[in-house]
Image (cartoon, rainbow, N blue to C red):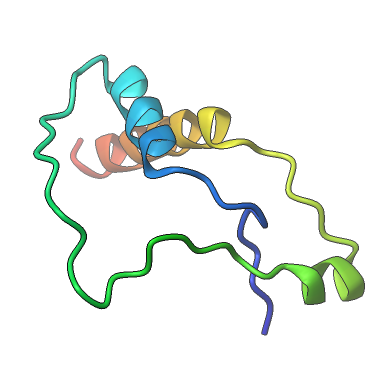
Length: 81
């Protein structure tokens, strides 16, 4: 089993910004205190994939999120016609 994440910690704000730009909408934000037990920071350990598969993440969030949204729209649009 391999973890194929980005391999670096990416702030949630980066995802929100990419989604906003892709949808041309502003997200409603309600900043709350972090819940007990929540993880303040995480990152995918891709070392096994790097070693065994020569995996290198090359798609930053600002590029990957719009691509995913475009795919999602096209996929579900074709299913509804």
